Image (cartoon, rainbow, N blue to C red):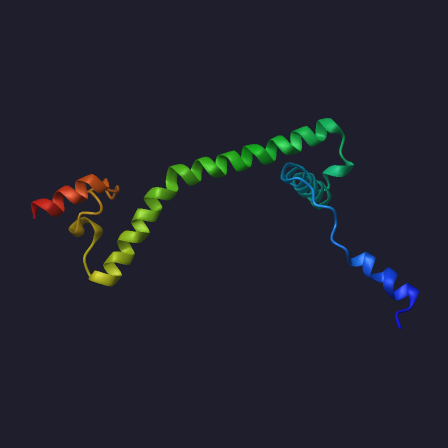
Length: 117
């Protein structure tokens, strides 16, 4: 026989009402911003101080993204060339993957070199 309080306890484990996706995304963004403010102490700052701190963070992230897009491809090709050398014993220049300056060769040129040889 079920007691009355046992039957009521199951209602606590009912799933919450489903929210639309945009509302969940907005709630998630607000939660992450709240965590960011609490973690770095922005919640105790005035709005102008928050603006300066957030601007510094955005500038830093922007410069990081810019450097990543500017320098990462050449670094990736350089490391891939070294990996190819480890596997084959030939450099990327010998295989035609890098030009004489260490810059990546476009895939169309590589395919053209393969067709000619």
